[in-house]
Length: 146
Image (cartoon, rainbow, N blue to C red):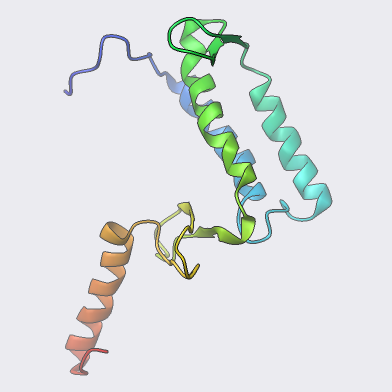
């Protein structure tokens, strides 16, 4: 079992369910349309997200290294930390938020490439897997590569 840092928060099933609910509410607001399925869909997605965020009590604090959000109950700090890190995704250019081209991958990514033509969430995993599979199909079929 890996060593856990002494100050690591305990993350329970309720926290995992909360993070998944935030992810599910946020996802329709991202991507090529970024509209959550139209105006009504976007408002419903924002309302779901707001309901989840309202479940966490937090306050601004400056002690311990500058301004940050601190959960009222220490056990909920992981929820505050997740919210602070994922909400800026709403400010991304929706045309540059894409789903990975690997059909088995569920990830979205922000394409910051100059050409805006990135296809995979990560070249080392999904991109390599796709290119290796295409190479395998070509060699099995006896056709030369590109």
